[in-house]
Length: 475
Image 1 (cartoon, helix red, strand yellow):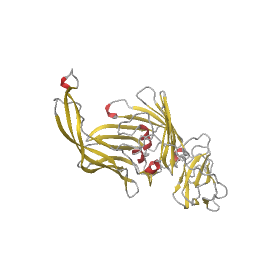
Image 2 (cartoon, rainbow, N blue to C red; image 1 turned 90 degrees about the vertical axis):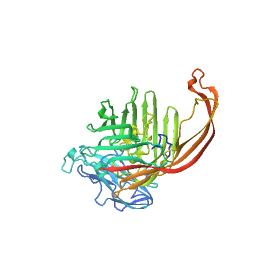
Image 3 (cartoon, rainbow, N blue to C red; image 1 turned 135 degrees about the vertical axis):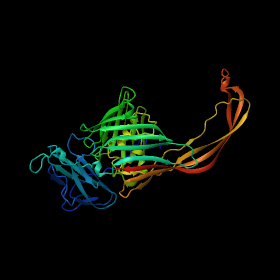
């Protein structure tokens, strides 16, 4: 499939909310009577709220974001604290719980949870001590990270893209196969992407990930590690939330492609800055209702923008799988300095697929414009015989995407398949080749005579549908 989300966005300002933290809330959100706004717990405790949670009432949709208050923290939400649920889509009564990881740092840490509804904000503060009630520092092995480990999500082991062709379509297109391998901690340590064209491998990428150094992932990439070639190597630096902060990608020249990422308090990517040799640029990303809706890209040629991308997303939450399926259809969202003519996602988009570039969009993308195209026969440039008119005919297909992505789900809510239809029209192309007596190249008579094409007609002779299907397999 071709992909629509190029790195071209428009700034779309989100409506701001005024801060109303007085009393138990404002006109749009009300805490339950007597609910405290400050909590202090010990290092080995993993619940930041009472067992009954924090209850409140809203007049409309709401969201909760988490931010750490340490001055040295920048970008992303802290990895040791989570809120569940973190949003609601309508007015009503809600209860949230705050989960914490064991604090093995020996230092106190503090986070604020901001609940927003309409023009009102309420702030909850949680402080976790650096020691237990007995004054001891817990072992790091006892840490229970608040960010869900892959084991509490569905682990994808394979994605097969296939095409169910209409009988009248003789063209064949690329299909992809993704295979993911895990370690005993359910982390992806190797994945491969193989592109197949009509039964033959046309491209391939194998990546290995090494987590042995704290706050880093060391990556090796190769076409095939068994072929004896030298793999590309680069290191991804992570922020406190476990998202990519800095990466330097190898290039065909001596200068690497250097990229830095910034995130908002909710852990969503809001800025990408890059440089390569004498070129540099940046991209900003805006969000509406938890999904990417636009942004701005600036490079050596100036600034460009687009917006309105929120219309491409549906209502189903994108939080169950350990990978981000949206990345399959949003290739080009992250600029990686290359002109990627392969069907394989670029290296930064693949990091997004692994949920390493922020939390992504909260819901699945459901509209995708693959673009229209046609595949036809060869054009005539010369003819071996002079002074003749030759009638010719051929057939080809024109293609138009149905924009809708259709999801089928398993009983546990995980994706079973994602499919999209491509409308095919078979065209009979008839024309005359009119040949004169002028050679294309007088010094090379074997090159034939100049000719023109006349009396062209294109007649639809059949219609059908190709169906592209992504099938998900789990461990």
